[in-house]
Image 1 (cartoon, rainbow, N blue to C red):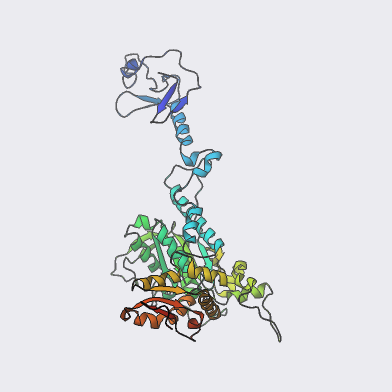
Image 2: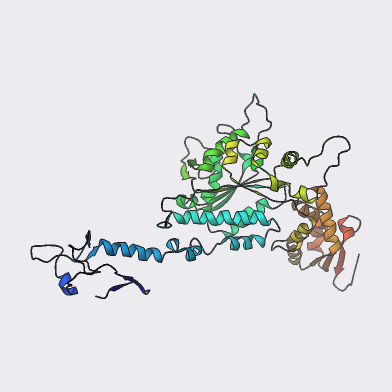
Length: 460
């Protein structure tokens, strides 16, 4: 036998640098030696390095046959495996560890196709989801050299941002591109246990359904809790009545976010004694919470001394840069004043803010994403065989009206529906209509869109 031993199909060799036995037997002699010292005078040898039992500390025998492996070869085999597993790689190859098909950059690129702007929020979500995959993977591998006893804990996320900035869209896009169970839950329907409404544990029902009722799969999923800001205390002072849909629900969330075994009704709704429950361990479920937090910007500006008071004070314009980005400066104390209990804030350690949309971002939302509003309405008209076009002035007028409403991107759809409703009502019956051009005047309600029928150039 050579001084090197080949393992598998790759050219992986272990060189025995320890001293070799002074005498070696042939392979046939070794395997004919029997399973041990059977009185024939033959001493067992390692089948790899041919060391005898007298030259090693431990000699392990195979369950069947007369093959042996010594402690030296066992240690060398472990080192060989470590050198060829990504989690045991050297520092130069450390980047190969983890998942390769969903890197943070790849996740963000998918989000960019559907969500305009919000670069920091997309980066935070991408990294959090990637680390969630790595945390799951860390339990299925032997461990990272030097960190075998280190357990990676989850880091739940809290997204802050005005209404219509893309919080829910980010969550839905993540659900579309990920291959783990993903569920979106609404916090407004939750109440404290024992009161009318849904229990906190019921938000896991959607996750269980997304995992096809596979509990093990659901326990590695992601849950997005929308409208989390509606759970804030209604006032800072103590009330004689229980706040069953606010602070009471916050307290119910604590164990769920940190990790507990929760009894979940498989079909959702409230729990009752006769209903069988499915028990889910939430230790490795990643929770992402989001909300508009209306009024939080005033608390932040007051702390930063940017909220004017008194007669003659000049209030900041809504589209001013520092007002649009106010949520970036949110700190834990601001959430406390808003009405969240400290225990809940501590279990949502990562804060990421979404900025209010600017006019340029609004224009991009209308025209650029895969599911842009202009593309959606053009598709609706194309299904009737009619071409729909928007003048640039018309798009700018739509954006101006949306900015005044202050509801973000949601206002864009409302305005476009108002402009096109009459046309969509008569569209199926007008077989000669060929093209529709939306103008600035039609957006302002001063004229009708330009209609072009078959055989006509223009008709007002």
